[in-house]
Image 1 (cartoon, rainbow, N blue to C red):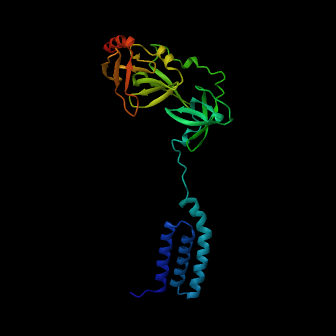
Image 2: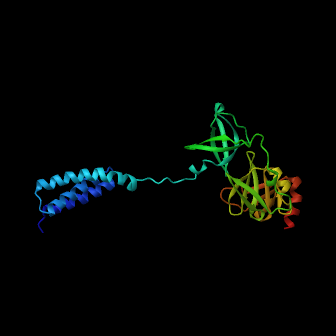
Image 3: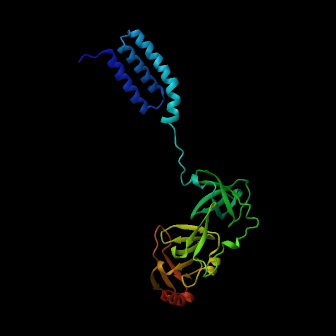
Length: 277
C-alpha cells in the first residue's frame, strides 16, 4: 500500500492527540486539530501550500477554541472534601491551653487531637469549647464560642437517672442520641470524656465522667476507677492481682484501652455487680 499525503496528516493528528494526554499543554491538541484541517485539504485535492495554510489556521482555531474547553472539562479539578477539610466549622474542646506565646494549644474533636492556634491570638484555657475557623496542614485555627461566657450546661440535655435510655451527643451543629444499650464503656483522659460504642465508634461528651456517673443507671454501668465506667457486656475477663485489685480485660478493638484495674476497695462491689447480670 502506497502512502498518500492524507495518511501522514492522519498519523500526525493521532500522534499529537496522544501526546496531549502525556503533555497536557493544549498545544499538542491544537496541532492535532491543525493536522485534521490539513487532512481535509489533502482529501479535497488541495495543493500542499493550501494544506499547510489550513494546518496553520486549524492550529490557531484549535488553540483559541479548544484551550478554554479543555480547561473547563478535561483538566477541571474536583474539590473533594476530605476528613481534614471537613473539620472547618466543627466544635471541639480545648485539652491543652492555647497560648501562642508559649507555643501550646491542642483541641479534641471526635477523639482526635489537633494542634491549634486562635484567630484573635487570645489565650484559651482547658475545657473551653471552640469552633474551627480554618485548617493549615495539620494546624487548626479556632475561635472561642460566645456561649462559653459563662459556660453553662443546658438542663434539658442532662439525662435523668433511670428515666432516659439514651445520651445526647452534639457534633458541630448536629444533635443525635446514643442508646444506653449501644454503649460499651466511657472513659476520660486529658479532662475529655469519651463514649465508646460496641461498634467501635467514639464520641466526645460535654459532661464530665463524674456527672455522667450520677445519671447512668447503676444496674447497667459500673465506675471501675477514676477513668472508666464500664458495662457488663464489655468485660471479657476478670483476674485478681496480688494487692487485692482486679485486672479487667475489655472486649474492645480499634486501639482503645483493653485492660483496666478495679481498686481493692471496689473489688467486692464489682464482683457483686457483675453477678447481677
